[in-house]
Amino acid sequence: MSRSYLVFDIETIPDTSLGAKYYNLKDLSEEDIAKLMFFKQRQERQTEFLPFVFHKIVAISVLIANGEEIKVVSLGKDIHDERGMIQQFFDGISHHKPTLVSWNGKGFDMPVIYLRAMHHKIQASYYWQGDQSRDFQFNNYVNRYHERHIDVMDVLAGFQNQGRASLDHVSVLLGFPGKIGIDGSQVWKKYSEGAYQEIRDYCDTDVISTYLAMIHFQHFRGLIKTDELKKYELSLEQYLSNSKKTHMESYLDHWKK
Image (cartoon, rainbow, N blue to C red; front, side):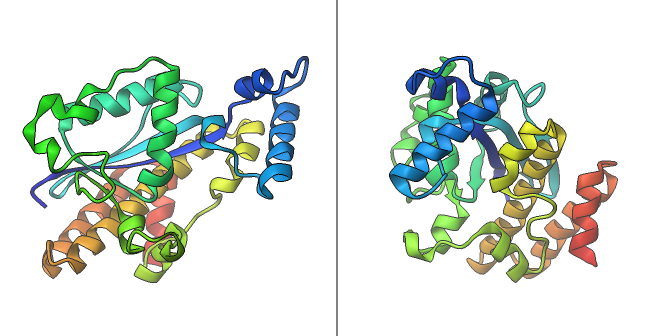
């Protein structure tokens, strides 16, 4: 792979400040505001999954891959540093000029990032315009069918909603770990319990799985040879083994058992 890849994932919780303002709630705890937000959504849409505008980002993880060199980073100072996470994310894009890779990133992650970036008054001129690069007319980060951002889930589904598969299911299909420990539906519960690092670690493992799905997809397309695929997998194994981080070592153990 001659290109630089930036694989990313976000985790979110209800924006209880916005919920309190929108529903005119006073003197309620975060937990009670969130409960009411979920209740309202259940009444209106028969689901607790909130509209994108009511999501607040608590984790952004990225995996940066340049050939066989790999690095996984959890952005921001901590789980409360939403502005820092988003600023680092767009700064990384401007610096590395990578191909973005995600799992439902065009359908969820980026729309949420857009809204939260605007909330924090963050600018991202390179992401939107490529510093006026002519190439961006024909291959940019925003167009659903362009390859400067590869949403692996969307491509594998043939750009059809009914064809979408979960990262968990595809991971198991391809022979690497599915969800370990928690999944996205438990993030608010973990946040309420103060399990902040567990959320960031979970986000890290999702970008690792997305990276693996991506290189298998590139192999399927004929852009990576079989021996190269094995090299990239081995490089990832070595990175996880040398990370000295429990969640990455656990991922490797589940992968290789």
